Length: 196
Image (tube, rainbow, N blue to C red; front, side, top):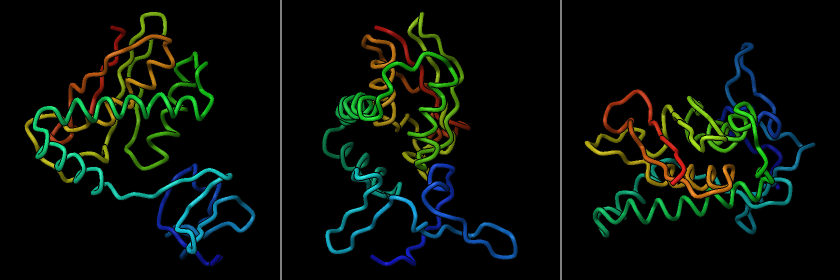
């Protein structure tokens, strides 16, 4: 493995894995910290962290996936992405052992680890009530719509993922509707989550 592996990625989560590369005191990149557990195996084509598989994917991949689904399935593409996202959201909660998040702060911290620190966009928990089974989540600079213009919302996968996450946290099925979208020129993508 090449210990000079470098990433140009800025995240509090990845700061634990990589150490800053500085030029004139300014952080310009990240260099692999040899003492930590991220491994890039070029022979197997795998990236692992703490023994678990990870992948790094550019936003254009998800955008092209959305576009291809819409071309193939028309309006059904949104439903397919929502269902897939919901399953993924439920799985993320289980994998991270986070089914018992009870406060707004712990829920926001979890969302930040899943979205903000992984480059999916800046997460803001605008409203949260476990007792009423409702939440409003805003994501600034959503990876699904960076550089995309559309008259309709495009973050089906994220809406589904949030529905899966909050289904697990609330202990009952919820719906998630994207009410604002960066693709339409809105300043953020907003998702309203409510029990069915």
